[in-house]
Length: 494
Image (cartoon, rainbow, N blue to C red):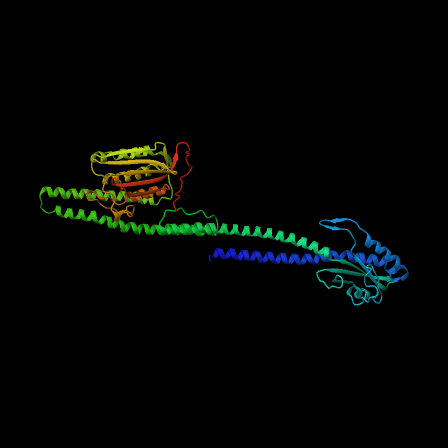
């Protein structure tokens, strides 16, 4: 399991346990608070009744009148809407004991008159001069789910305890209040839990997204794909990303020098060997035609060295780019015409007909020089492969937000072994009827230009009529919606 998933799991479990313990504590505290709210007014009631009716209840002559008053109270009906609770009768019980704890009066006609209650806490503690209270099951069933709370107060005469008045109140309504409060508490806890979970997921996403971007960037660097370093913010992850980018730049610099040194050494050996051999042979006596042939070899190989160095410098400058410069809106048809005009001598020399067709309203946003150079390289490659007096076709179309420039020749095509290698640096091959061997950098430069503009470059064989088809695809802009960007767009390749 990933570390961030573990952190999320631990966070969720911690929030769940904390929320559960909080709800449990609040629920238990509510139970105590509701019992206190019930007991507190019973204290006042017990003391009031002890003062008002205590002595009357102890006097047998006054008990009949007291009984009639409590019976009238029991028969009394009323309507009291207490929030969600509706009351219509009095359910309070009152009993009085003498100084021995014997019940002498009970408001319940079927109550406990004559019974000894001296062992009950409310009576026993009050007779001792202490605070007396108890909670007991309702009736004789012993059902603990239905209880009644009793609070007692002493009946005093000249400061002496003559008896006890105990007031009882069923707890069923307290349980209703408590159940409603616990339900509300559960709902509030559930909402709080969902909010906490959402915040945890947001935190997870906030931390995870930069890590995903950093991982994707690391994979792109590993695979050698052109990719911009992600924006990670001014935090620890951003510092790691900056350190990775600095390390990549340092490693790329070392690897770049090593690869170029090896490749350049390999590529320079062939023309230098040819030049050296020709120079050594020129020191020997030979017919003039042979001497001219070796001079031509020296001239050709010198030109090849010059071309190779120029291409290397161009490609090195391009590969070290992190974005576009000198960005402008470019009409694709004008770009193609400019490329054709630049190669007119080569086209005329081989008697090749170049047909250009396509969407004249297509525009590309990018660097004119680089895009022209890419098209020139593709066209130059097609001219080298095309037979004399043949045709090269340049087709420009706008498809799915892309400008596709396709250049087709009718030459021998690409050998099967070279199809997957033609864009590799320093890779080149010569067809049987083509005497000039390229530097192996032209198509690699085309791919770099396309990637820098957020596009792609491909080269494939044509089945219909033979030859090869080179395609460069760049994101399109039309003349109707173009807006010059304020800064160079970044490559979006991943």
